[in-house]
Image (cartoon, rainbow, N blue to C red; front, side, top):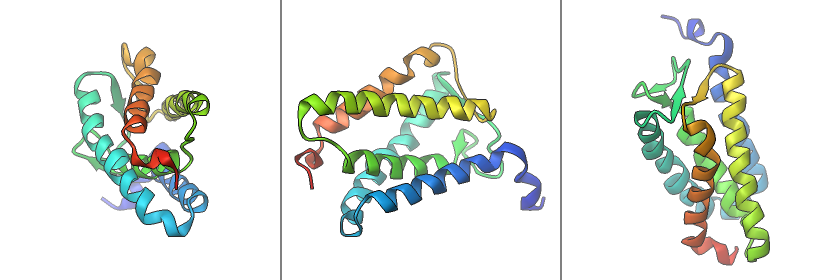
Length: 157
């Protein structure tokens, strides 16, 4: 089939959201720090999503919809790891050093990520399933907390 047949309706939201995240990262992170933060973003965000996305789908906590033509293994969209890579790069670049700022920062990012899932749900592209509806913000907070406490970037740039 012709690619334009797949790019109808809401499936185009995935690449639009990914491109927006890429642009935001490139505008926020100084050019001389791209290598450092994009590498960590790739490892933690991109590869992390490549592991956690299928796991959460298998566990029945999330469900991606309208993947064509961007399907990756029929589980999630190819744009998701890319978006997570750049989102995590932004997260790490803006990471506060002092603990009083760190806790609200992690909580804030967790709820932003949860909200992105809710927005994708409104487009009919994603669902938090079952207990995932209630536990997702805590999973995000745990993910961010773990990588924050183990990050050499916490000493800042």
